[in-house]
Length: 220
Image (cartoon, rainbow, N blue to C red; front, top):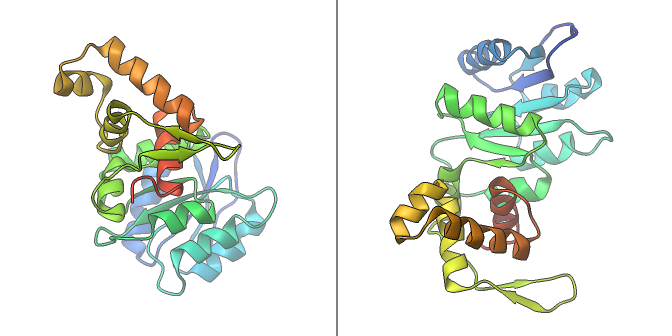
């Protein structure tokens, strides 16, 4: 395990992955973002021990000595807890719901491009819950939205067929313009549909809508 002293400036980040090559790549990317690497490790045990460094963000890649969801849950136990971004293996086909239930703040592919991982880091540091759109298909299977949602009073808040379609497009990572072109609608109409979807889910953004949908099993 390697520790570095924190300096004034960008957010402090700790990296955990079993491969030194992956850690070095992440360290270079993070430093390029202007953030500070407070340490890196190859095991889950060292990642959890690093909580005493009070990193603002912990990036968890592939770790052979523990289940990733268990690591996330332990990292999120202290108060205040660090933000946690998980990079899942390309071959992963399940576990996204477990990660969200454990309190993960972001999930991206370990094999993702530098641009994708950079976007994930920036989104999480901004306080957004980030889920790479491609993972919704890879980890949750075929996208099949649930018709009924339950509100806090136990009543049913139904999504219309068009609103369910909007949720599918969000899961596919489509832009408003792409959705409009696919459905032969105006961008303003697409925005209106999305506003209603957000209201029924009780969220304010695409990333929040996807996070709620996955955590509630709406895309299972």
